[in-house]
Image 1 (tube, one colour):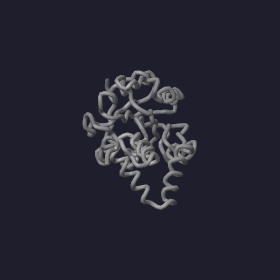
Image 2: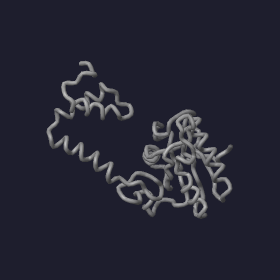
Image 3: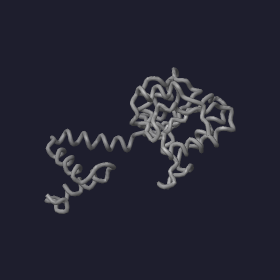
Image 4: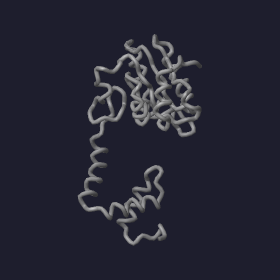
Length: 204
């Protein structure tokens, strides 16, 4: 079938919406829509309602910016976590990757991205100011830079170092068990766990 000629406007609209998602081409979008059409109405209704509920009711933790069902996420509200150690990550996927190692017991700070001039992302677009505020309060002993080992990740590490180095806080980075150029969320759990445990002082 030519994807410029749909037998139904409703079908075409649905395909266009799925195709607007990253990594979803029009052929894949068409297969997904056809799969939904073969399901019973209750299944499709649950699917749609889950997406709407996610969009309307999801929270971003007031402390670390992680996704949560409540204003403060389960990690930040856990009294057993080490409150004086903060692991700085790019996104929520990285929190999940590190948590899966079961090696880290501190807190997190989700930046919401990394500095990337080519993509128009600068320091002001990231959650950096409130990270500095946490450090200013004087209760943080260590900041772990756990960003992807890419040029953009290293640029962001350096910027954070310049912002935070003036405070009385230890700045560390993951051990280089994580290969240069690797995205953190795709690193295997054993390697990532070792990189957390064997972290090094950050050096310019």
